[in-house]
Length: 366
Image (cartoon, rainbow, N blue to C red; front, side, top):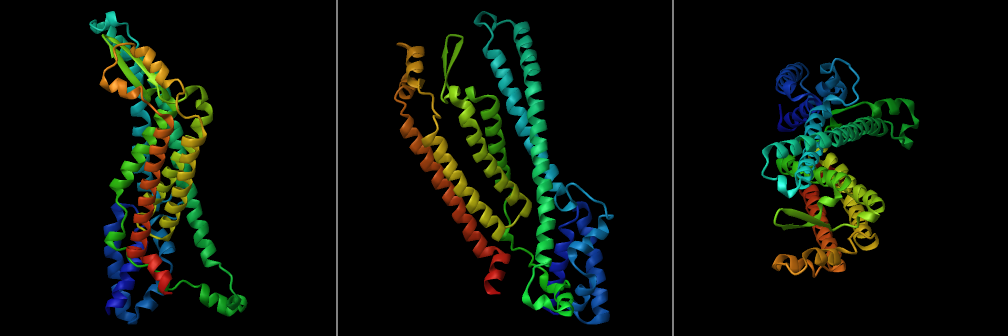
């Protein structure tokens, strides 16, 4: 068996086992290596052997019991992992905020009474559970829908690729010959440097989900917090009176970022699809960020006035700094930061795609 033939065998096995649960992969890999090696010994041609086995996507179905899934085995483990992360991020912040709000609303005279504190904690948990359940149900439905759509779209894309029309296919015999699967369709096993870090995806997903939950359920959480004796006063940074107009654009921008992270997580390697998604989503996020920061009335117009009235003559150095708040300067700073970070991420994705992405390099050489 030549190195080229061994490479084709590895590609075929990779395309089969990537569609199976992790628990099956090692066993199926060994079975396929033995099967292909035996067939190669009889036929002497790796291309003939793999052609006889057929499309790896179809071959993998032999290990899937022919069942139909809302989310297939190729995505299922990633889906479960993703659901766990999202549910935790959707529930924990709401419960924590509910507890903080319940304790913060306690009368100052009651702070030394253990029974009152316990009662406040119970009340906070009770109030937060409803919002947490609603948030978790919404997050679960959204994640399931995203993965189900990806499952269906993947199938449609494969069908479209197989049925692509050309002049040469006017001949029925030639059409049959050219539409038949051959080992030449196998993509290379990805370079290790082309793999997308799951840790990076975790950080991005956690940040987006937690930020979305806070914006939806507790926008007042983003505030200047002033403590005097045992009294806590907050001055919101955002314009809560216009929040119904601002929030949809804010959430849309974050959901676009989440969709890009989901795609990166599912694909797992830098390739043309990931690169296009990252560029398109990045540009849309920059535009939406500009709308939120420069067009919509995001910031509380009375922030400085309310802060000065709350502080009175007791402002410390940190509070005095906040009284110099300039909404335009803050918006410009945030927008510049978002643009730099987004362009940097796009640049890294484009570089790694063209440097290590096998599918892109293959298309360039074809």
